[in-house]
Image (cartoon, rainbow, N blue to C red):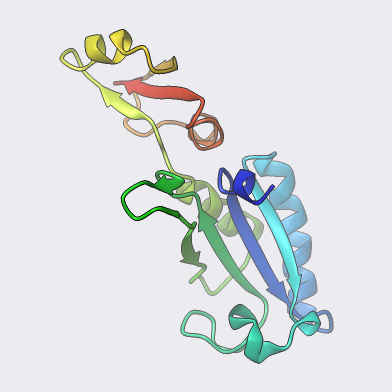
Length: 168
């Protein structure tokens, strides 16, 4: 189950139950969760349930001080397994640095950090890509430089089952 989570972008919401700001941000996150529709996971962590010295994100740190609530985004790595180092790659940790925690700002924070794991193709690289027999392929033909949110979400969720590419 934990290796399956490596496919997803995960927003962690660290809160204190008695904090009115935590309650307000929780309501904003409910709205955000409806908008992202399974492209990312939102996890709420009650910091009163942990001994702060043993849970680093619930204690004072360089990103959010000791104020609550805190948001941190964990973005999937490029490859899950590094064969040279023989280790599973972990998510990249992206702290939320905005002062305001509103629905639109949180949504933008999540969606701009969902990675694009597709290959960019041109007239020289499309033939070798199509002739490779390694996996089934998905090609997005677009006039946009950066693929849309749904396509980027698909590249994260299925990057080890399908080859994704874009043609501009």
